[in-house]
Length: 159
Image (cartoon, rainbow, N blue to C red; front, side):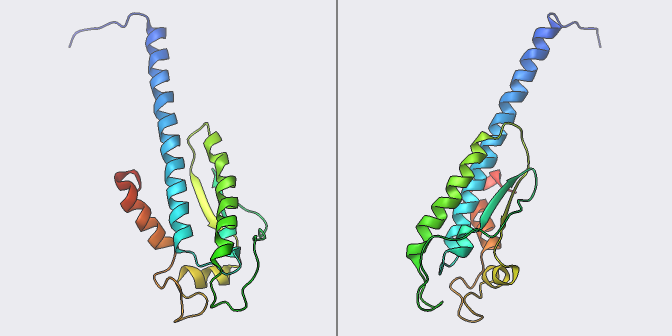
């Protein structure tokens, strides 16, 4: 192999860095797209009574979010067997509005989602047993199926 020389090394490095920056921005945008798709799928599988579970989805950038239990918008129906879909929209909108901050990410980082309701309540919902075992609205559960749906919808973008 022969020797070779790069003319204008500073220009070459600057061009290479610009391509890296452009690729990083594309990766950030794809990550945010995946987050919104996953959140929509989580919403679609989450039963609504008070809106508490829907309202308590939270996203973190670079680390798992922590925070207080967020109060839902809406009123309670007379029975947990009466699903209160009117409580769905305002609570989903609150979560989506908070997620808008993901569009401000400038450095590629891991995104984390959690639900900050009582862990026992979440376990019941995520297992597909809410409002009680054997009478679940989504017998297949929530998180695993929402992730599967997102993978299917976005193809190779989600692993």
